[in-house]
Length: 142
Length: 155
Image (cartoon, rainbow over all chains, first blue to last red):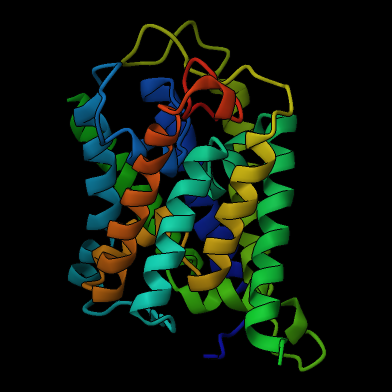
């Protein structure tokens, strides 16, 4: 594992930016900033005719590091330990589970908890628990 | 105009992921690694990301949802379900396992594409395949379905 340092101020500030973005999306389009829902709806069938806006939102997500690199000349560290087979399995499970479970960390964890949704609270507790259990098994089970 | 605004909002979300450290899978995994607490290598940062995001959204939603309608739309599309169906338990359980295996959830994975990471491309392609899969599962005869809803993607 790669050690990371505790960054309470940057994380709180970055979290506030994520929250501000969720609020702005609700203000502008009336929709939840759930990234799994936004990404999954980029694939057919298209039912509500707001494809372009979702694509623009995802393009903004992808453009963020490009902007940071242009503005500061560098990017913060990004360390991905998983190899290709693990990335594929993890990606499939993450994609399937987020759509099957009606949302991910952003839709349930940020927007849902902020709306005091019981469903989102249940979902958040469950994915935190299985996430913790998975990392525990990967790193401490021998 | 709406599209430009949505691009800017996505950009802001991505900047939030980068500033907060969420775009680094190692940081996410080090948060989920409660087994590292005794060794002193546990990184509690992600709790601060959640705290900042939920606080800002909680305050902001209270104001925005009082408006007659969104700026570019005729109504708010806020989920209304409150029942606990099997999918709201099984789905997040599966999602959490995937999250714990690589340290990526959908937002940071998409943002990681802009880092120029090949690993992110592999993960995102697999994630998209996983996202489309429930649509085929939903095509099965109703006796084998776990549950159905009007919008299977509704939070």
